[in-house]
Image (cartoon, rainbow over all chains, first blue to last red; front, top):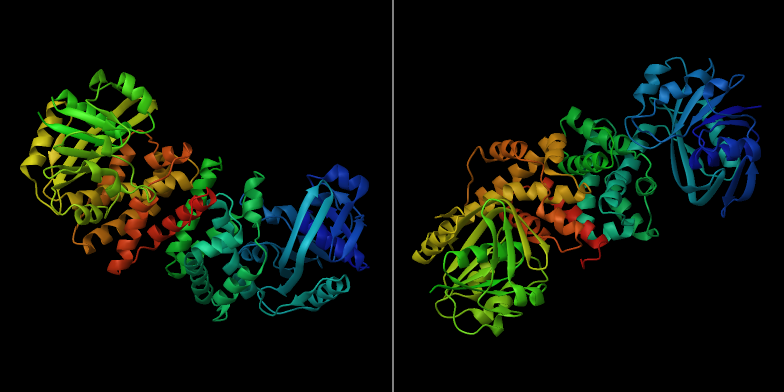
Amino acid sequence: MIKVLVIGAGAIGAFYGSLLAKAGAEVSVVCRSDYDQVKQHGFIIDSPPLGRWNFIPAQVLKNAEDFEGAVDYILLCTKVIPTLDRVALIRPAVAENTAIVFIQNGVEIEQEMLDAFPGNEIISGLAFICCNRLDPGEILHLAYGRLALGNLPNGVSSKTIQLCELFNQSGIDCKPSEDIVTGRWQKCVWNAPFNPLSVLSGGLLTLDILKNQESFVRSIMQEVCSIAAASGHPLPDDIVTINIESTYAMPPYKTSMLLDYENGQPMETEAILGNTVRAAQRLGIAAPHLESVYALMKLRELKLGYLP
Amino acid sequence: MIKVLVIGAGAIGAFYGSLLAKAGAEVSVVCRSDYDQVKQHGFIIDSPPLGRWNFIPAQVLKNAEDFEGAVDYILLCTKVIPTLDRVALIRPAVAENTAIVFIQNGVEIEQEMLDAFPGNEIISGLAFICCNRLDPGEILHLAYGRLALGNLPNGVSSKTIQLCELFNQSGIDCKPSEDIVTGRWQKCVWNAPFNPLSVLSGGLLTLDILKNQESFVRSIMQEVCSIAAASGHPLPDDIVTINIESTYAMPPYKTSMLLDYENGQPMETEAILGNTVRAAQRLGIAAPHLESVYALMKLRELKLGYLP
């Protein structure tokens, strides 16, 4: 039986973990904030597309070091924020044959994992999903859900194929990606404008941002493309236009960064913007619009009491 | 006796109007929001540098068309915002020999005055002052107060000299400027970063902005310098450094735009940023940092319910 440990069982972690359990894996979770509720009752997953079910993890833990046994996969699903040490969080549960999968936002978040676990297979994952935690242990899957998984630095291993198959069996579209780092830059094309603009505008939805400042949004997207290309991950020529058109077509959307902002939670400013701007500086690419948005997010965070 | 009509007798208008009255001019005011209070009791001006006094205007009016007689000077001191028609506001009181003086923020706000009143002398004024309206009819002059006045398109007339002398008699430093348009760009070097950054950060004071994002502030200032130069108003080479150093030296300061924002009042986004960005576009100067800040201010205003 395939053993999985989900670390960071918020909305994303609990949802994808529950799908693997549905597909027959033995899934345990490390879950801090909702520990008591989940330990007693598991998770309720409410997914209009897939149904409503109760996910009872094999083990419910407060820390990865409490896990007993060895897992085939660690599924790391926390936010990527400077105050959270991703390596330290998973290290106690990494065994010889454990594949480390991270389903997380941001660019250039691979290297610390490769450096820390040179002997393990590392799989990078991208989730295209809209899914919220309603109450302790209660997850609402609103829409989408597609996953892309690929090995680092590139390619697709048999373990990645196996994981994709489990997800597909559970009803979610999960595709192996031969070049997942490029996929990560591709996702950043959308995230880099819409996430910070929703916060800095004071709470606008995607459609209002786009309708009023399309050319600004395009400038930011174009800079992400230039940085991606310079870092060896060129994106399709029409990627900006496709992102613009699909955002016009989708319902007005509240970004994850705006949700964090409104809930007083740390935002993924560094993973999405900081790493992008640093890549631009390292590679000598001009990115003045991204720099401006990043600087303003840092000022906003300073005002919120984040340390500089 | 020199006759003056102050239009827009908020903090700035009431303060400078009261100084002219002190120096012996006959000063009337158009003042809408505090009309009843001012009609009955005039203004109380509380100025730690200059004392505390009661300013009783010759006439207190709700509209310029109620003014009887002809004035030597109109002193226009409203904010510069798109919903306020500066020309229409003053037109009823403009007589043949009236000099139109505007003490207002922003760049490229001259042309509509020149176009509307080709037969009148037009004097552009810049105030370096910190001064607030506390209660109806009550003005607190906190610090500074220096004025610069110059004719449009340039030069200094005898009427400008006369007005400078009146201000100097009243205890305020007022210098004639041969090139006031350049002075306006010079002031914009400071306003263009600090005003919007204080708002978009959610309320930071000048020193916090500067200490944490000095290079971003410098980039914006440098773009203003390039636009000013391209428009025929080159600024001194060390202007950015001087602005940075003087802002480090001054007490942490809440910008006028932040005060407006916090009080739910319209902000001078167009006069300070919009006109600057439009000048850059017209002149073919790259100004991506200014463009970003302007776009974000427009999104912020949209969220506040301003029309796009």
